[in-house]
Image 1 (cartoon, rainbow, N blue to C red):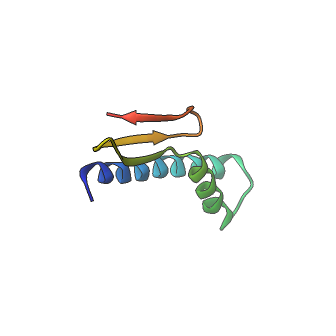
Image 2 (image 1 turned 135 degrees about the vertical axis):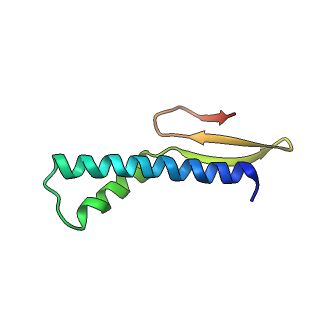
Amino acid sequence: MTRKKWKALLFNLISFATLYTVFYIIIINFTNLTGFWIPVTSFIVATILAPRFQAINYRGEEKLVMSWIFLKGIKEIK
């Protein structure tokens, strides 16, 4: 794997883990869910809301791009 692919994997992991933790805490404190449903709900919400990072080859140059539900289009990460 190239450096950009590792960076994309790391960014995906960090963004998912952060959102998962935040929603886990929110669900525990503000809902009546118990047991198995707390982590499952956190996983689903974090999967939907986390940005997606990907390393692509564009005109012979590898670039790191991001796609997110709250942003229109694809953004290049420098």
